[in-house]
Length: 168
Image 1 (spheres, one colour):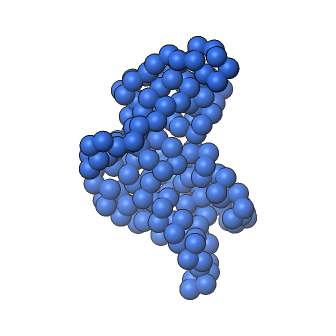
Image 2 (cartoon, rainbow, N blue to C red):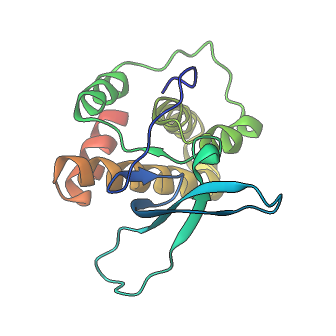
Image 3 (tube, rainbow, N blue to C red):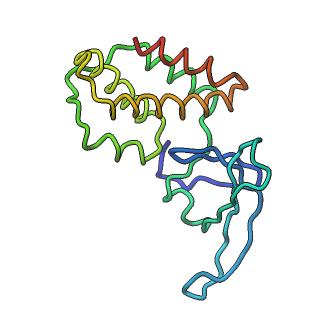
């Protein structure tokens, strides 16, 4: 996702952070803590099991800076699958310190690269592969699968299986 041009957000848009999918359901103008008029978007998690789920607000000017973004497009999903099919560039060192920072950027392209790095490290280290790293693989795979499943109207399980198959 390019950050050069501001991205437009509207009521009804689906957005995501590094954990959940949300829907913008309203906007309002109120004073901020500087007593300036400010446009806020109101959004809540998309979860059919929670009727009265929490809702959040964010200044419209900060939505992109916060790490929230629109959901990936179907054309992007096809590209991600192509990337996952390609072997990982082994010249890129496995750097755990930057992995969490990369994940918080909420950039699907970079997240897929992290997932590939973790999977390659798992293949290289075998039984010595860290439990924390395995949890990261599981969480990343689930989050990507949930987003792709939401966009493509497929089951999360089928998308997870596809991602796992491509990582091998």
